[in-house]
Length: 311
Image (cartoon, rainbow, N blue to C red; front, side):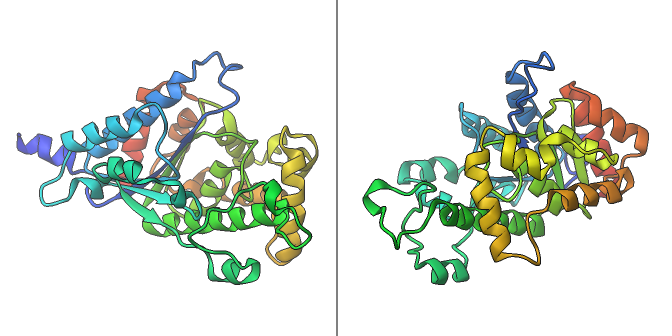
């Protein structure tokens, strides 16, 4: 390998990049095939590894054989003196990591280092939970008794656990890339990508808006807009999942009156940050291209340019 090639591969050496990519409900409206999300997931990962960065993901690896693809990528772009599995971290909230059977754990061993976030002690005590027993979000028929946890309480525990996982991830990464993102049928305080991006403000943050979804809404909020899907009224009254989410919203805010779920505050934080608050090494013109392009090559080129400046 030439010295020039070595420098290129190690340009991002030592950086750990969090990647938040999920399907967007806007793909059809934008005339895009859902396969573009998988393409972006794979290609962004490939280029970051090739430039020496380590990767961090929250939740399970995507279906469709991505774990095997990632394994091949890591083997190709291994770094001397570093274990292959250390190139990628997979953060799993409680109780999600309880669902991994032995076969799945073995399959992931060569791909990622699993970071299993334990049940929060106060949740264990308050709800008398066994950390080794999976908690369903719905109340099973066999435990429908007056003293059983309600569905809103179960969702509250999941919400707290997901936030703790995202906080741990934030504390251990150097930058975050967000793409797409569902704005419905989520289990956390906010849509997952919205919460991860919110926690990422203050560190290099890349908003790739060409696939729409929650990322596009965050970009609108960044410019002072009021995207409908990032409002309390939409999520609690008009979204496809509002009958599940509204009770969780009330449960959470009853328990946390000083730090409630607050969509007005979320939008305001992005508006106050503005483009300069992304701190991602890109100027306003470059960021605006990143906000709009659906070309994966353009996305990668701009992200790498920004990371090279902040790294």
